[in-house]
Image (cartoon, rainbow, N blue to C red; front, side):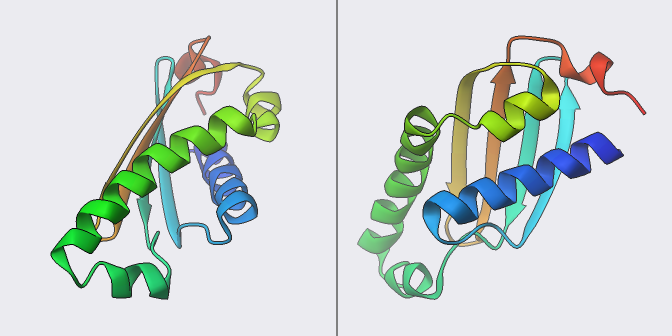
Length: 119
């Protein structure tokens, strides 16, 4: 992870903390062409971990964590991320493995951020 990817990771963590009350404990970002691919660990709150102890709780949490995160970014434009990259967010793909507490987000921007932010 280069310094730009590390800074983007910090922006993702603080954005989630601000809008969800808790950010992931660890974020690793890789820029690939127009994508910022973020691997995230430690996403779930203690209450969510308790809910996940039941099978139907796992399914409900996964649906909520994927759809609600996408909706959160639609309602709250990530201006700090866009300003940092000087690129506009055009799409977001989100998934989470509830049992491992490991999530992935792929941010799609309108420019090739990989070549723009090589170290």
